[in-house]
Length: 212
Image (tube, rainbow, N blue to C red):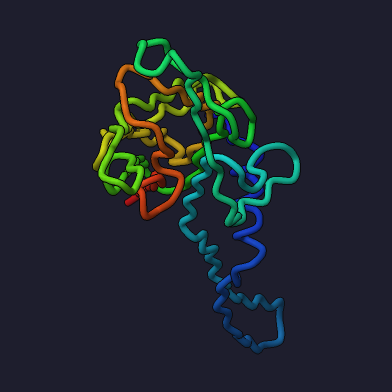
């Protein structure tokens, strides 16, 4: 399997920032004829485990200068059904997202085995007044971005989603991404109000990637 530029940079940076462990010796030989002396050095390079997850705005993980750094920006995707169309079953596209129109970049880069991805909500979207909209109304369609296989999007629920498992290839290196386009199914009728938007109103999904 071809190693991505991001992974090559990851491995190269790790090798440069970690010390090379070396043990050496000295030996002396004496005599009047031809002499031979030997010394041995043991070398070891320690590569740390790295797991990179991006959903939305984040650092560069592709190209000639990937950074694989943490970025604290949290995107907001908003759905606004027009008056008279609420609950008619016609899906509504979103606004926001790092790629605009409710589209988010999603990516995983790892170097040590299979990766499991989940999405967790703390409950249905709430308006703070007792009314709710279930997360099952929010869907995400996954489409290829830079990797050959698009990174699947977990199916959202009011608790923890299904698990998306990326099986480790023979070289143990994973670089997989996608464009996730979020939509609102608009098949429920709810009172007027803003649902979600804040952590208090269950408006935040936590995506979690795990690796052994």
